[in-house]
Image: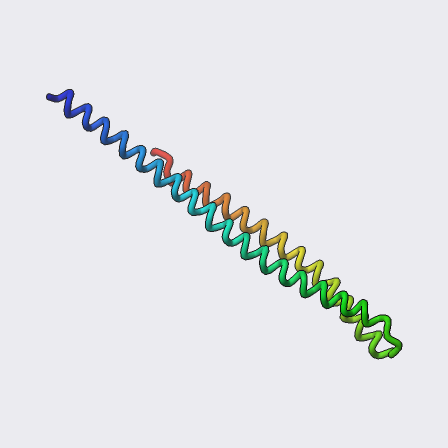
Length: 118
């Protein structure tokens, strides 16, 4: 009888360990999905603003072909603003992407540490 109870307890403990492992895997998967969603949103913003910056730059470059001196200065200014905006957008994207990847790694590390047996 004691062997039967002991076997049942061992089975229950194994099941508990399996449930804990499944919970850990689910948390890690949710973390990965959450950060992938954030990265997709970040890429959308990046491409939209990059397209706007390039449009401003190209509009400024196209405006340089006109004869008016004031218009040429304004077009040159637009071209420079557009060019600098593309550079700033690339830097912004790199910083945000790096931040998200570091946060994702930290979150996964926290989940792994929380599930370690004591």
